[in-house]
Image 1 (tube, rainbow, N blue to C red):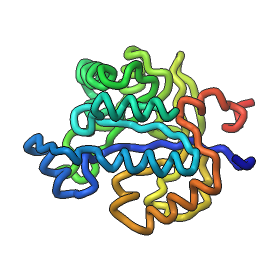
Image 2 (tube, helix red, strand yellow):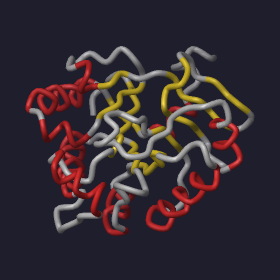
Image 3 (cartoon, rainbow, N blue to C red):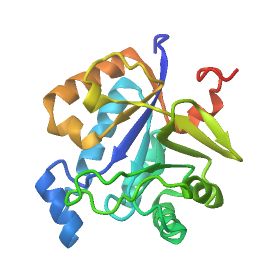
Length: 221
């Protein structure tokens, strides 16, 4: 691979299907078929073709990967993180973490799934003043939502800074060190897919766990 600027790649797996209608059914009536999270396999193939690595944040209550999918993600050098829905009750957070770790092993990082459109995004109660202390108590190494403009520390928890959201940016230049992609939109919108693949040729992407070892990049050393 040629020498390119390093970026860190965050995938928020918000939906079990590319289709909004099928995802809504999955949320509301626990609908699931053989195509459940099938687009993640297609995404892995794209990343393989460009030699890129990233972190997949799954919602344990709605987009929990199968053990086989989790093993495939990890075997390819990617990371799995927790995209938490229930943040106001530490016991709910712990429950979600336990569910995810049963299929993915130890989970180092966490991000928040926001409310979004309520009837399409059940749960997701967001950031509040106790949230980071809950992350510390549950043993997370980093929080990757982008709650602050600069990389920071709270006890042993690294708080990663703000990111560029690709499907909102739709440009191949990524100004922030972290890029957020909602993978269902890569397959739902041709424009997002085209920019995504162009971006993959421009930067060298790593999972978010690698970002906590790169303080110099974030201007801290």
